[in-house]
Length: 318
Image (cartoon, rainbow, N blue to C red):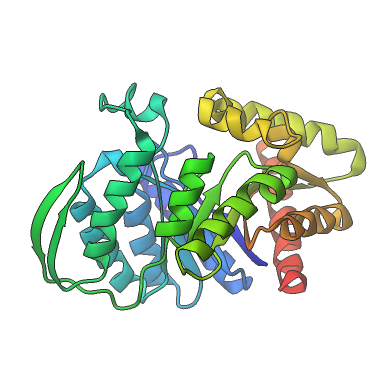
């Protein structure tokens, strides 16, 4: 199982955010982690531009978006941007995309959120053609009529992973992409729902077994602090639970909220938790470091302890 870390903008001005993210990716590469996943937060930094900057500061680590909302830009524009970033990153981009949620697409962007699965299927037709350039992109389907020259070609193939929560989206991800990126999926949801559906779809389409990237909050702490860690996960990461998409995914497992999915405890407990996700079918984990503490200094120290432990654990899980 590949072990990766989420790196995203947090509070502070733009210059400090970028500097902090570049410091974080330098740590992740030096620590030997396999991947880093950059969330596309609606109100903050552009994930692909961030990866372009990270690509110029690193040599080895895979850099992925988690995830770019499809409705926010035309597939030709996304293909052009991804190919440009792939060149900047030396062929280390993993392009995570998804149809997002109604509260982002409709309520924030003012765009239609209708038939998101069908839209994703049509979008991937155009995106796949654009990512295999150079050459003309000629695609006509129910959503797009595209006849666009594109002189860019990939310096290396661009793997595309689709955020897929329900059965239809998992089939699309298996048939049309290289895997899926998950959030709010516990071990049971991955083992009983995600893994069999996406793997069967990929096999039916003649594709190789898909990647399944499980996003997980992780906190290194004492046994008596586990409840505190889970409560903090619910407090700072729980907003997305209002989405019907995530609610349906939670129903596929045993977790009621993101706190239940949080992997917290000592080194042995975290190692056992990550192994359970691997046994469920996750090929990758994307770890959201979850510090705990009553002051800024305590939070920083907690984050450092957790990430040092993760670096050691990553070597054991390969």
